[in-house]
Image 1 (cartoon, helix red, strand yellow):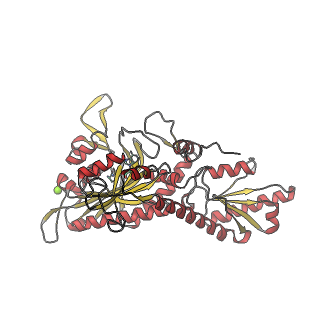
Image 2 (cartoon, rainbow, N blue to C red):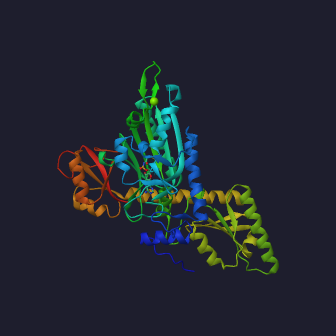
Image 3 (tube, rainbow, N blue to C red):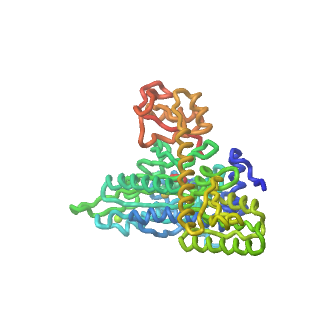
Length: 478
Ligand SMILES: Nc1ncnc2c1ncn2[C@@H]1O[C@H](COS(=O)(=O)NC(=O)[C@@H](N)CS)[C@@H](O)[C@H]1O
Ligand SMILES: [Mg+2]
């Protein structure tokens, strides 16, 4: 049964069709940029977010839940912040028929409600460092083209972490911790990524500096899948968040915030998916093993086949592996298509020949075959599940590495950014930087962490011909 998904290279159609056919999100909700999770999609989302949350729990963050409604006076307290969000905020103006005397924003992010309370919570250096996070809905009336999971007006899985420290070094270290946490999270998802320092003109409103995590989607566009901001004392001064230092002085706290949204799910879909549908890292697949009986024997054999399949499912589930018996009436081919569409990492088939050989045939989502002895099925299946995750992680990493190309001329850069990331020299001057973006018609992601001028053959600024002070990545972006 040929699947009726468009080929992946028609990425936009493939992505939209897959969201619906694999039952990830239902885009038929009658509001722009607001979508509904299907149960399967929500199961996948929860497996992914369980990991994101446990990484925060394991690194000393406390989980909280702050109010959605932000009185206008609170939202407007930090100048750059309100300037950056005033075009994006949804307002609540009435309670019933009665107009509110102060309108309230639906939170676009939670710096302002949180730091209102930090002022009451933090008195002394002994209250620091304070590290909290929440996974909540936020709202941004994005004017650009909305896309499910990618550019939403209601973001349903906004993981935002906020920290306060007694010293600037504390905040700097926390940004590094945030980036390591994102590194670990995206390695877990097998999603390769680059980390860059966003240029001055593209920082988070109110931040001293912003680091971003970007991955490359199959249409050659970069998707920003996480950000970490050093907020310095900007918000602490606006919200009067002071503390008594060890030597009895008063000082304002040094803060960070860092966020991930359900774009992480879009990244897993886009990076790993193929023409047959989702390809999921085993660790997050809602069903990890589909056990499929092949009843091509006689009455007794078929009964034994079904019994064997049920036993395998029970053993796998008892071992914590999410296995499902597919005893539907569909023919095997239709079953395979359905499980492939949903990215199920492994299929275990049991037919008459397998009864004789005492082992089930394993076929992973990429089509590679293996055997699982009936009495070693848990071990064999676990090995195959891990092998699949490793294989898709490596394939994706190789693809991303190959997509970063050093460019000396604008023409080269224009070609490269159709598929990937152009690396160019820049003299660090803001006007020249903006001309580079205009000349290539893309965004400057910023300086990649881990390598700079001297690590590449690039010596001059692509715009001015001066010596390059920085090398920066350029890309088309969502
Ligand atoms: N409209 C949107 N739809 C989906 N994801 C989004 C949207 N806007 C931002 N994001 C994601 O949310 C992440 C964090 O958003 S942010 O604006 O960069 N940073 C903050 O809001 C800070 N308060 C840190 S939580 C971004 O890196 C991006 O991956
Ligand atoms: Mg105070």
